[in-house]
Length: 149
Image 1 (cartoon, rainbow, N blue to C red):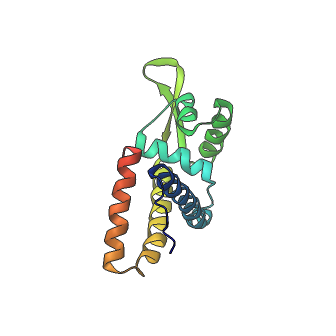
Image 2 (cartoon, rainbow, N blue to C red; image 1 turned 135 degrees about the vertical axis):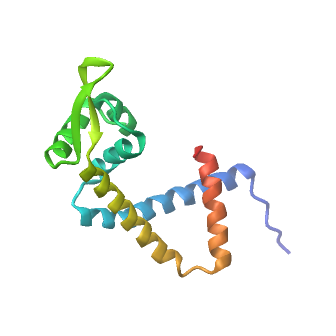
Image 3 (tube, rainbow, N blue to C red; image 1 turned 45 degrees about the vertical axis):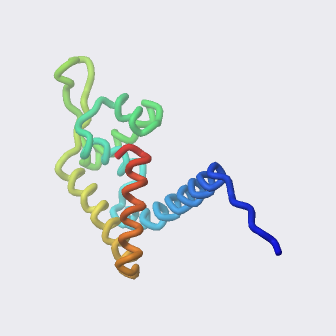
């Protein structure tokens, strides 16, 4: 008779982390299709999200939040400004600097994209049983704890 050896807690944690990482990537790829319908690139939507939910920022602060170099963010902001999603204005604390703000058009586009992604995700979740949905909800709560949300 063979007995299975218990796995170590570290190996269990690593396995769950690996599965969660893979699932998150696949989920985001699947939902990215909704963003493509908006006609706004993922990097622009991400930067716009920082401005809509986090408030106006200097280009350098926005670059830091998005983990890109300032020249890259400047190009993104140039395009978003050209398309009417953001505006630049004077920084009240430093007249040499500018602040980037989301416009009403940018806010509407971001909220529409989020709504479309949530709707697409909800459509897939509707196939779950109430018990499965409760389990998933508890798991989301745990993820939020781990990431500090």
